[in-house]
Length: 170
Image (cartoon, rainbow, N blue to C red; front, side, top):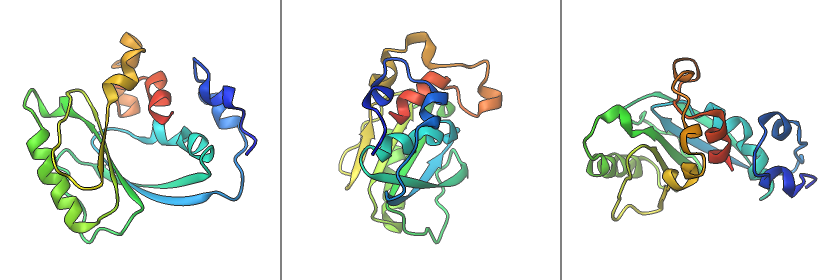
């Protein structure tokens, strides 16, 4: 692969520079379902650059914006699922128990691995097989106030800033 590590590991990522990098033709394709209540597209637009460094590429299949996580049935099998949630949309209540119930419903439809990415409150999940919770707070911590851009949220579909979306892709 011809992507220079410094482009992927640069302290400050540039969407323009990342999108200009060539991707090899022979990458292992993954079909990933994204179940979301805010926009994942700003992350997905550069995610394949990072996946390519591992010899993979992804095709993303998006749900509607759905706070209820009412998974479409029948749900086609995917290689993986991403739950991309902004927990602020649920108010102050702890969503962990509800999220475990929704993951059980997803697990009944497909056994593919699940990556849970929650912006906002920390989510604690107990025994959910093949499920990994991404620590969004740790990913965004170094950005401080630059992690969010509520001014653009009505247009971008997410309160995450461009910098935050790039860090999430990394």
